[in-house]
Image 1 (tube, rainbow, N blue to C red):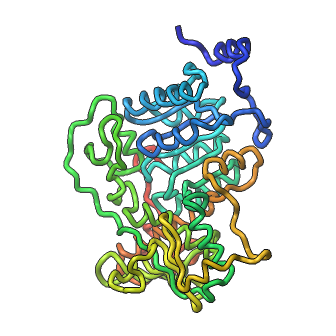
Image 2 (image 1 turned 45 degrees about the horizontal axis):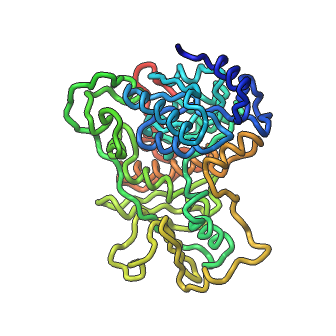
Image 3 (image 1 turned 135 degrees about the vertical axis):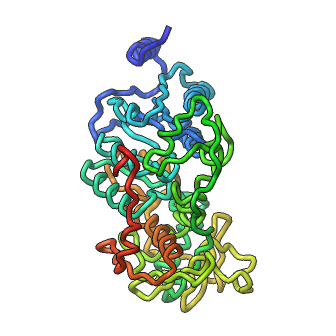
Length: 432
């Protein structure tokens, strides 16, 4: 016999089961201290399952639903949630439902917040519809597939007063290496910033994969969504429950290549260090050939370079994901550590009156705490949009192979050809 959610809560209350009450009509910004935030997950592939694991141990949330276009993945997501709760001593009968279509999940009135871990081309539409439904949102990076999608997300999130966290967790985690680098830059420890090098992959390529039979239980048309129609290929949408990050990231129709994948993390740190969370560069200069060396210039004269000279001995053996060069020193930082040249830049502690970055040690926890308080998260929709925009600007620069002027206020180029690439029209019903 299926136990309804109401019946489950009645039985649990009668039995005195020790977990916070789950209320079905909580008001935005008024969650009580013992009230769980109720979560739904859109996309439960490798990253989605990582988020389920990350939230499972939290007593202040209840995972109620999963959604995926592959039946095996959504069924596995339900089992995973029940098993995690059982392992933690929470009832394995805790209600959790599975959906093929994200709109069915968003229609649930008893879900407060959504975690979106879909391919990049499927970020914007669920974000917009979730915000309109009053759901708080945690969305994976890069936030969007195109620049104007990001502005749409920012506007609708603001209009509906939902709490938004972009999954750029380098701001919160990795032993504070990136936070420390940002604080050193912002406090002038390397003098005036001159050059930033960001070591990430290249732009995407057009998808030319052969068509394969669609596996049973996979809604391929829904996986494509706003993307142009093409035949199924397992490289894009792996069969069943896979254990890797699929290669849809490599293809222009669905993502921004390695440049936008890790670039959304590392360019984000550069933006943070430059105090550009609400702005961006003003000039993009691609190389004549190749897919490294594109240069961004900010209004203050700072130059940011995609990549770095591999044979430069100064960079060898350093943490080279993000390199900040100033008039008085250099900072090398990655997920593996932080070094400075000279070492005294890092060794000497910042003073009592130094500028300090937004404090966050746990990206998930920061989101949940902000849902309770109504405060901005460490990586808001605006911040996520601006960091993704840098990635998109680079991809457009490499694609067009000409210098471009960018207005970060109006979010327009001085070039009509480039402006046509600000948004891709969605296929069929899938318009942003």
